[in-house]
Length: 314
Image 1 (cartoon, rainbow, N blue to C red):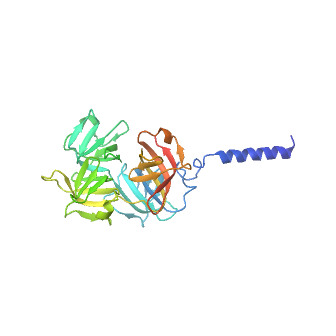
Image 2 (image 1 turned 120 degrees about the vertical axis):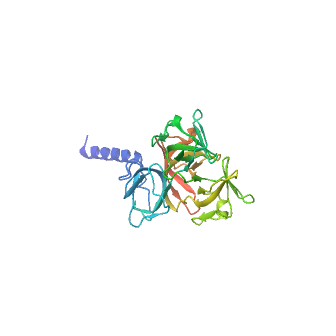
Image 3 (image 1 turned 120 degrees about the horizontal axis):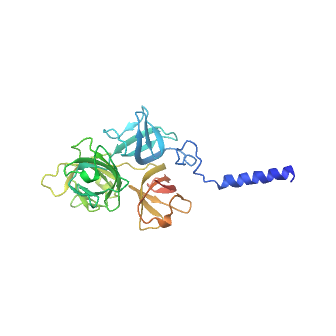
């Protein structure tokens, strides 16, 4: 074979191989998430904390740098396993703002080992073989009144799927993060699944959240006051559990199908997919149950997140 013809064949083969490679598989420095090639600027991240040092937070298979300019939006320090919300100001991984919180902190009210169910504040907490128990807690030896912190994902029916259960750092704290699915303005009651919480004249509205915004059902962080004789838990403080900024988005949570084809719920975020969405390790045609995924996408000014890549997590 002439040398020139052999060169053309080799070049053509190389081009075909490179064009056929997965664009997500080889992004340098991405820690396996493969979004760096498409990232254009600042990013919002909502994912569990995998590791933590004085200068960095590992979440979403990435390391995010804490700098002297990083602003903590909650007074309590983050803990491994908690869901962190953070954003960057540019294309670097330097954190501009961040906040971390357990999904729920409180005292066990009911406990049924056979059903793998814990009840706190009327919220049903379910665990499975993937749930990590820490601080000496054991699934079949939990006690009524024990103060625990639960890190996990809230399903659309208000059930909290526990990813990690540990002892509460602050035993007297009463806190839960929910996505309300109803707000009765006349009764001043906020609903999440079958659970209801009571707004009172003493409720402190924080982070710029207003009653009007609450009707749009954003994710909120609720600190509860003592219940006393009330049948409902009164809300002491209520604040937005952080919005997704315009730009890149990286999230890790349960992906839950909605009734509309191509639309999903990821934690508190509404996700849209189309023919350009890349699915890895999972098929949208076989997504009958909530599945833990890592998702990279783009958020617009309306809060809509268009998924570019969805990867099934182990």
